[in-house]
Image (tube, rainbow, N blue to C red; front, side, top):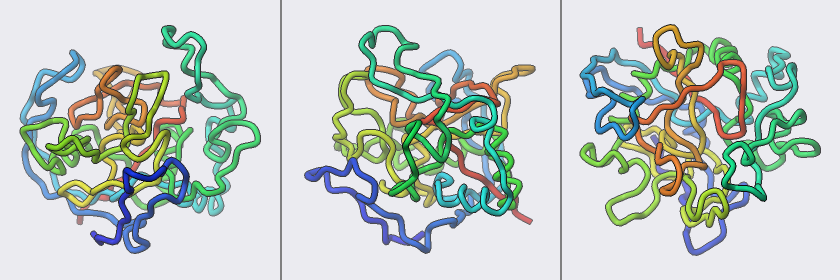
Length: 283
């Protein structure tokens, strides 16, 4: 991967689009993930993360960054695809709340929210070409992957790649920050859900590739947006697994900015903090 990524300078305000950029040669690039074994669910923090299990994974190629708005726009232009949020009544957006102690008050089902209007009515993608596409369901992500000549990763593949990328395998939080506490991912800094200080460079979503890539060369495996996998959350479960945490994960809330962290989600529903990346099988 190229080193031509401009990282943020914490002394400046980088909460606006365009504050950092990934090298053109890195957009759409894949990194090779070698086959091997690893401990899935290592150091579990929540009941749904365990028990740890040693598994083997075949090699594959992983998109180095989350699928961007510009990439998804190309898919829509080529195919005429209409996302489920656009067809079935909107998507969920995180919002300020007068009653932050009430979990559901943080979220609003916005009938006008979609991948093209991520902040609801009147919003556009202007300046957001390199942001990860959001408000996409598992079905939408699968459709894009088919068109792009790939597929969604399984949960095991995703966690394996994220684990290989850690700078310190003994520190499950090393994908989020270095040993000195400097940020390696876009998460929530400040008192959740009241104030996101942007101390890590961004309040809200960041463009892809703004942080140091992991040891595999893949960016943003931790934080920014949750990522769809093509694995059911549990046997016979209608819910599927999302991985990696998002900009809404914080020390005072979910702490799911770890490779082993996992959440379940409905396959036909979307939010403003879930995106995806794709993989390709090796010959």
